[in-house]
Length: 325
Image 1 (cartoon, rainbow, N blue to C red):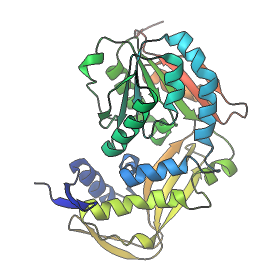
Image 2 (cartoon, rainbow, N blue to C red; image 1 turned 180 degrees about the vertical axis):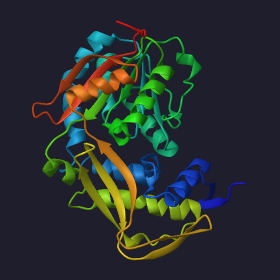
Image 3 (cartoon, rainbow, N blue to C red; image 1 turned 30 degrees about the vertical axis):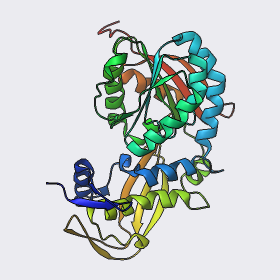
């Protein structure tokens, strides 16, 4: 039976999947918690603040690419498709795509239900003639999309380099899940961050204002709030590291002193210097990105990048599989 938790003055129930992932993450060595649990309402708000930071180039760079690419996307994909956005967040870049492709319906998918509904209302006001069907779900799992769009050709939208948060094996699994959800003949527009100088990468994940640090530590605050945790949040510092061997930024929470605490009534301890691995952000060269897409069942058909080569956008299609040349 779920234990009641307190959030915003009301009694709620902790997500059992969140509880399971957190407890398993603290029990394993090295400790790690899946990044999708960053995104409660506060985490979603903090991430939106991150996207406006001067150090965080991906959002503004990708938006610029979209303004150039979307008319071409419309020519290739045609109009009237159902646009299905995976991990929609505030949908700030979505209007650029919707303006260009004139979809018949827009389906934003996000794990943060309140944030999803708020952003959907804003977007509905911008596009009063567009049917918007917000869908609260974990897009990492196979989805049964609304029956009303079952026969409508689909264009998946996965911006923000969110695919980089997954290890390659999981990224391939996700792409296959998306193919299954969207169906044969669907298209997918996906953003991927590119490998570049660590002097650009690290500040993007460790900003001078400390917003990313607050975003990272909010995960501990969520554990305390929803799982009855007693973690001393002030005993952990945010760390962002470039792992060149794996071509990824890693985010960690490092204990600055020996600590003992409980989560859901279970005791845990960490020594000073031990870390909780909270996020990866993999970066891809252009050839790597196309191999990743093909491994997930998607055939790349077009690509765009910014003049500085910081970020790339790919359009791919779920074509009939060919077991041999």
